[in-house]
Image 1 (cartoon, helix red, strand yellow):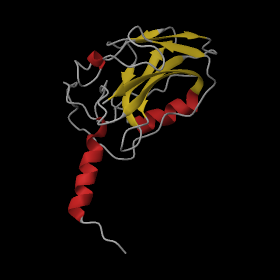
Image 2: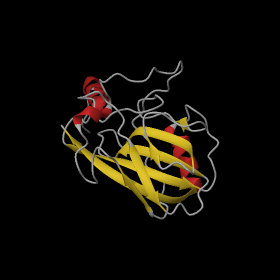
Image 3: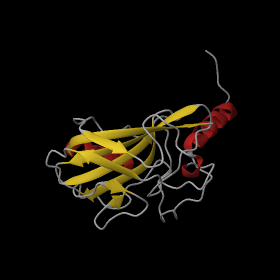
Image 4: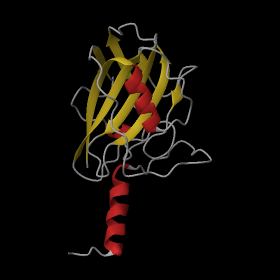
Length: 194
């Protein structure tokens, strides 16, 4: 049996964890930040796709401009959605990168936007909440791929009822709540290469 030196394993883990973190300024960390794990949650389960998600800064399958990555200011790109909400009572937004070296990395979780919302920018409306992203912080963590081309999935979900979850909800708990209540979805995918 081949033995792997512990130092090599530690270095591999450190390199893997650096995969999708940002050097851009981030929102202040909460007083109790859970550790980043290598088992990031996957995107919530699929609901019928009838929403069209767009952004004024990039098209489906196109490159996300540098200003919205860790190589730029790290701003969150605004998105908008149209289509039949199938009677949804609330909206959730989940942004992830399935190409991250540590597994799917969550960049943004927004819960309980009002059903009347048709877009998301830098500020949340009253009643909406940020869940924790893969860096253990609420709000946006900009794309920062270590190498190759990564796909950033901006998925909007119409929910049968608000999740009732507050600020700082883990991405796993948010994913579970979205999966349980999703009645419709739409997705916009942008690319960032390093």
